Length: 503
Image (cartoon, rainbow, N blue to C red; front, side, top):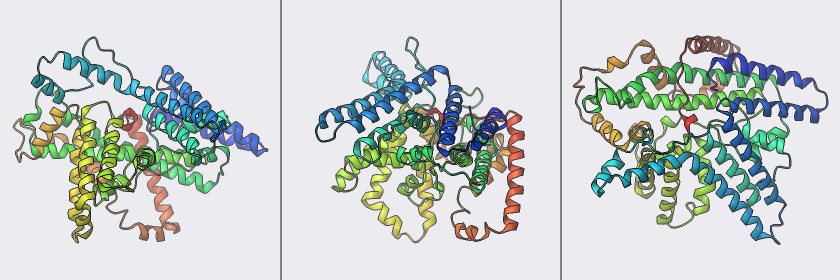
């Protein structure tokens, strides 16, 4: 079930809020919190069950595995039975990672083995590798369906057992609390990835205020508008431009203008799609009394690749830093080792995003650029007085990376980038106007204007005015208008599945 759907907006969310706040009339706080949590757990399981009953059963098994593993790790004496404690921890990690690998990468590995077996020569194998596309599974290869949001679920579980093992958080003694931590509907499918030490405490005790509720509602509407009025609007044009099977225009005849339009639109789409979801998740959480972690901080205003990753998908970046980068040694080691640690993190980041070679190359692009910035480019960027050049460099690297992220194969990605820098117009009779109508133009302009170009430099000014009555009235009118527009488009069938839900 999508947040930006008729079912969720007009039925699921209102019912949850009404029942949740009716339960607030229970007088005893402990009983009230327990019943509310039980209701939210049931609602979250129903929400997740829309992805499939089999996925739900797997999800429940993962909850049980990690709860009892965390309970055991916390109960075993760390001094007298260190080996047993470590064995439980490592075994749980391996099981979690094994589940992720099985569902996410088995089909890819089997397809690659089949390709190499049928290649006949090294040259043919390399050509097949470049054209390798996991969306096309060879006949006879079992295509395993990946459960909804399996990566986010596994990473949240790993963070819990690791923090318990390292003593950063206490084990959960209440399976209801832990199950809700793993399933909370406002962040289960796409994150943000939250730590048990933070979210678990909120599940056990949280406050509800009218200010918090209205702030959550406001955030939800802004996120809905991002998704429905910007990301969904440009998605159709992006799909047409990136289509690998086109009867009237192939990639060789695309031309530079259309290629640049496609990647600019996708750059807008992926940001507003994912950050819009995050805003809606934070909003739903706020309406239920939770404080969900921020996940974006205007990444397209970054002046370096390293800054971009401090602002993009913040919870994932922090997860990799805390559970991979720092355990490997972080930056408190030789420069060569630190660069190796960075390489490992971004390589894993690429693999995590998808079972395709394009994601690995996407990760390697950031490996190379991050290492170059660490070695010398970062200092030059800091000293450069013409900051727009820094922004231009960073944006270009990110957009080239998005080409691989969006493409089905390395072959298509390479040809697409070739078209971007071909300095030729389309030879198939198409132009950028073929993919632009008034709604796409408006979405594109709004996407560029509101991605941080205004908000970041005017943040202090906005703080001074946001408490003024007339500003609040104008904002509420704007919110009503945005919500009405979103409902019209959603009811009218405007739908594009969330990009990150696939991961």
